[in-house]
Image (cartoon, rainbow, N blue to C red; front, top):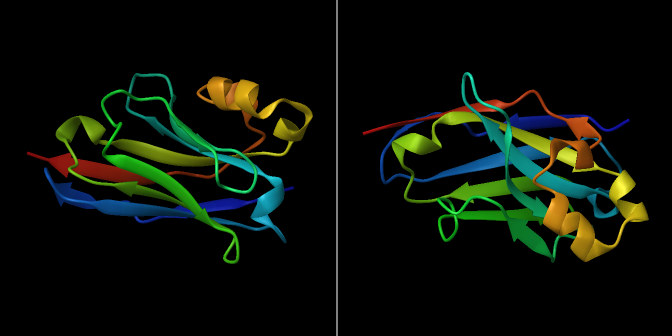
Amino acid sequence: QVQLVESGGESVQAGGSLRLSCAASTSTILQLCMGWFRQTAGKEREGVAALWRGGRDSSYFLDSAKGRFTISQNNAKNTLYLQMDDLKPEDTAMYYCAASSSCRAKPRDYWLSNARDQAEFDYWGQGTQVTVSS
């Protein structure tokens, strides 16, 4: 069982930056595939970005966020990050960290291309709220 705890969400002005963190309660994050999702009221949770095991290979799923959001991880700290720059009001959402151990049974490129789907993840955090005002 992996527990995930997000932090870093807050209220910011448009154009600002935030870095979300997700601490994983595991001896090593290297064995897990990781991802960020976001959700606004009345909408389905949508995939933002994902990392393959080891943290070197990534995929991004939101055209609106490409070039502004960066996913990364610190293996020594077992922590996942989402750097968000030039934030816009439409980025307002609850952001969730997710982890997958079952990704090990799948080809890397297949998993990365499908990681926008919540079903590809086994563990979820409770979320951290990001609010961007204009």
